[in-house]
Length: 90
Image (cartoon, rainbow, N blue to C red; front, side):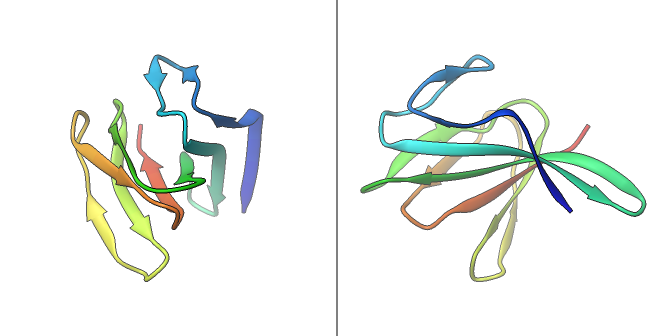
């Protein structure tokens, strides 16, 4: 189950010390599964592409085609008009 967090969707803002390019949108969620709960971010651009940096706690990126890529804090994340799910692990 996806549950939006307070002030969940932002665009091109400094939020939690993350600077987003002006064309990047993101929504923050808490995912509740039977055996665990974790935070996730859905991020996309309204036009073109942009790069962001994986913040502390980021573990993986999932794409609409079903692929998943492991990510470590500090890695570059390419964001396009196709939303990605950024999985945060404690």
